[in-house]
Length: 592
Picture 1: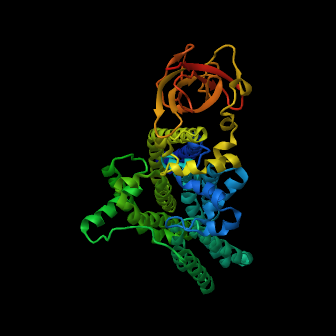
Picture 2: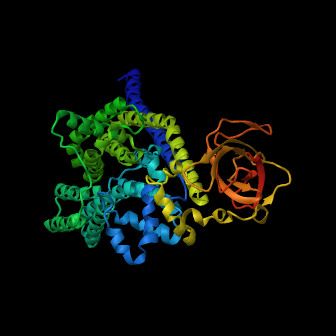
Picture 3: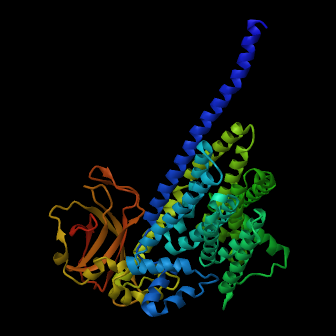
């Protein structure tokens, strides 16, 4: 063989290796990019939680205040077991009790718990992929970044800012994953002679997590048939299957004991009703990054079901190669899919638009995430998976970039929610009966007002702050007025609250703290030198030029003043920093 032929053969052998090295390098870079995108999503979720936080309970969260005011410790077990709509939410209620007992019902514990639960779920799934699936390197990083993105995506903003809602949506998937993982660890240990001593403990974790899912939300009952399916697929011992079935029967019986059916569904006897149900389910899973376009959400939902069909078609062959990963994420996928399907009949009566609710996105996003993980795993089993894997990574990066461009809307909604809840809190603290604003706190505005005397006496929720107790005191005894007026602001409107007596006012405007280039922490209103009102800052306002700098976009405030005559002089002050006793005047409203 001549030298030219030898050179050609050598080049032919080297070229594929170089191409494979380039593909591997691209996969590594993209995996770190996806992992970084997941980390950014986690930070963004925490930011959304901070924006939407308020110490005032929101709608269903008032049950913890009502329990403390009207029932007390003697009725704890009855209250925990009591049915909540169509659910038994024993585990979420334990979080409410902890918030009430140790954190004075400030809602912070619940929001932090929600973030911690999602991070625990992410850690659990990431660990299982590494230990049970043997995933390493670019494959593992890509999957973890993807799961972080799905678990913390801000499109589910209601679950991030409404503590009890988030608990009810985050606990069942977490317990489902833990239950499926316990089943798989039991299966693996039963096959390993050195680990058989742990098998009973793993089965106990599996069953205990299933029970916790059952009593976190009604969809937790879906865990039991899925555990039975998983046990059969893995060919577990008959004793283990019998134990799972026995506990499942007891748990489901306890769940439905003295159960009251609250849901009202249609008969679905006409084709139109069936079509509406199918559309609702499609929008439920297709609306993760679609705000109000029903048709587009339906198309994305149908596309998701087509992907699901493809994934299910691949599962038999993938199960033979990677039974642990296939079982865990396959069961979790069916769990979140089943959650959407069982939710639809009770909610479609409110219209298909209701499927856009952000609280459903924790299940819809996990639906897409599980399918993507299974597809990534299947690509990893192919001989020439390199190019296909890189293309899948590029698709994930594109999805993250697209979702990032859409993140402004859920962030704005969370901010708007947090501001309006804070304003409702001010109305309750000052005793101003602004029924419209109090509707943000509860669907029946008079209900929160009835609990105010108890909250004030117990110093819980919004009454953990000193400001509500300063009302009626001289301004100079509580605050030090800055000699040089460093605050800027303006009163834009004053409206009478006509739903109660004595005369109350709602004051709106904007305020800015130029030295710190930020909005002030809070608003204090004094009538003839006496503290008579409070205000919250954070409403959206166009930027203005103050001291050579632009104000922020959220310098607007709303304040309430109670028991004020038409001859009184009203001074509006800003407190630049929380926890300080110094303030500066931003406006004065003279007698009418």
